[in-house]
Image (tube, rainbow, N blue to C red):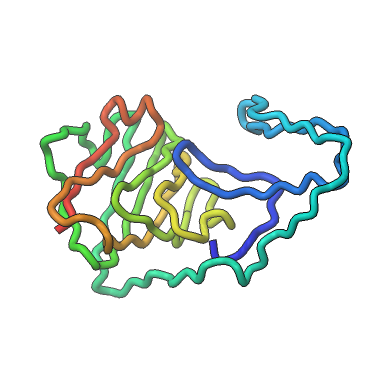
Length: 197
């Protein structure tokens, strides 16, 4: 991210990455839990000791990297990917020998992810990071933790997400994957091969 955000909850999926700083000051001799609000499961317990606070500083926004936004134009290639059911992308089940499309290196493209059902789909791209630029339908907003570089984005039922992506450090001539990072979906074939050229 380009700066810090103060949040009380985060909605993220398998394979998404995030850095959290949790301030436990003023909570001596307390037990707290990291909880999944959807399932109600307690994922992690914190035991705050009855000891003096450890001096620490939160990084200031000046310590964060500058993120140069990717841009698109009328000539930008747009690719749309429909995550169908639990097994297909654009109506196709994965075939490891099939090349589904080619992506030119050092070229920004707009990729559109959508689903009409069987979400959530944590959409994961191999070989490059991307910037989320919009979400319509479903939750209908861009979240603070999505404002930096991403390689996975959570696509819920009825949502359409647009991202800008640029393959600038990938190895041309290699196959990369676009897939749902939900294990049962990717195992059932919700993956696609593309080649960077």
